[in-house]
Length: 522
Image (cartoon, rainbow, N blue to C red; front, top):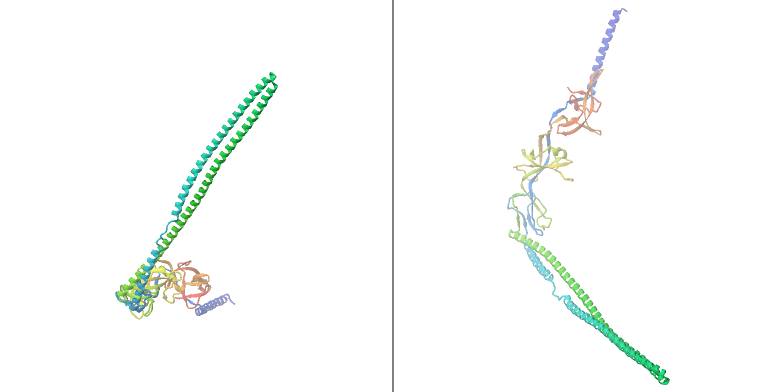
């Protein structure tokens, strides 16, 4: 075969191959069009969110005041909750016969309290009594005087005793000295006789001398006996004098001790009497204090009873009617016709115009502000009423919010009040509200709300990521993790690793998962 023929055959074969590949590509694209989901994509945008908060609210009064009800009174009639009243209209009408009976009972109670007060005053007055210490004081004064006299008598007896002892000693000394002088004189005479006897003896008159010696000895013996008798007599007189002085002193000492004991007893009696008087005074003081407390307690009850009587009499003058102090609506009450009021009975009167209270979810609390416009729709009425938000607050723990919004509000995080202005909506009516406004912040990345996905690993979106293949450019879904900062009904403000040119998948003809092939909608 010629070379040129071979070249022509090769050219034909290549042409047939390319035709076959083109046909296969066409068939592949046709098959993909049947199986690969078609995706809606767009790039993220910058801007603000359009907030549209909706829900239900209840019409309330701006202010609410408690109407005082007198307890233990029978109700003839009472305005029902929701009743619109003008100033001066009757809210509650009491049974006047029952009221008259209550007034009489209260008057009797006051009379009894006044008598009890007077009785308590009399019981608190101190009793008339003679102080026990007065008589004891007189006895003590007498005992002190007797003790002083006994002390004086003892002192005198002691001095007399000292003097008597001194005198007895002096007399004793004098008597002994006299006896000794007489003895010495007799001894001198005896010596003279002995001298004479010696002279006679020297003269040879032995018999005369012997007689003188004997006389001298007798004289000495008599002198000694006389001396001893005189000393003995002086000692006896001295002992008698000392004994008498000591006896007088002992008698005075006994009298002093007796008076001292009497004085001590009188002092003890006086101290006991003082303690008895002090105890009696303390008891009197305690009785007075108890009487004072009793009087104060009775006075409190008496003042309260008089105040209650005054209220009952004022109510009687008003013919048993309690009227509204200003125009308003009865918002709540717990009394009924024929019932008897008690401490828990009440009636609430709403005044100051009407407002609505709507619930807000936690994430919406920061999106509204005072002076925001609220569109209010009333079921059965074609027109809308516009109001302005006056107050926003968070519900306390366990607080109940008003159900509302697009679907059930399972987690009411707060509430708002909005002034309704003038309107024909009745108190207690349930209305719908709508708050439309732009977010206060401008966001860098806004993507369709439908593009936001969430699984166990967090929040993300899918982008259409282009890939080059032998069959040309194809797109697959790729995951990009994001964080949602805020959202409205159509868009979400997010942060994450989205590129400026990334094609965010917001919808598709079939469910798409990460890695799936997608086709881009033209």
